[in-house]
Image 1: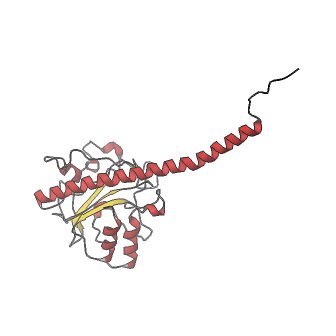
Image 2 (image 1 turned 180 degrees about the horizontal axis):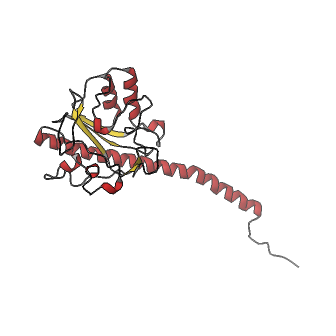
Length: 236
């Protein structure tokens, strides 16, 4: 009696196939996630360029950049009378003259500004403006002060680590809140402060999911090597 040989796989063959698929997945998934981060970084940089272009157009008409954007610490406050929820400076780019048709949101989504439950903020960019000579920041839209008219600005995304490095103490112990830009507490030629502003800039060569802010700065650069480091390290 003759038996026909079946075409079924043996257990060893199946295990080999599963192992190969697992190895390919281990290679492909990280590369896919890296590609996603790189794509979001590119989109954020493009959006920051658009906002910077709108700020420059505003400067042509008003001989000043807009006020700073007040951050909304409470996501529920957006759209209410709570001034923390207003876009302030960004509003000036859309009303009454539309220097930009709409304000883009951060492709990286929400981010944290404090390491506690509820310390999340909405997915929008931060904007700081001020006067380069005095290094005073501009005030809220409804109460101009200090650095107004403003002649420099800084727009930022918290980047792929979802952490607002400007709202917390830096490793160098220097507060760099966007609302205080251009930061009177910076000693322009201090080696420590040069390192602080350099570290604040997102650098993908440290790994795509790394610390630092994706930023764009413009206008008159405050004097000093620390600001040289900031201007050279931000997105162009």
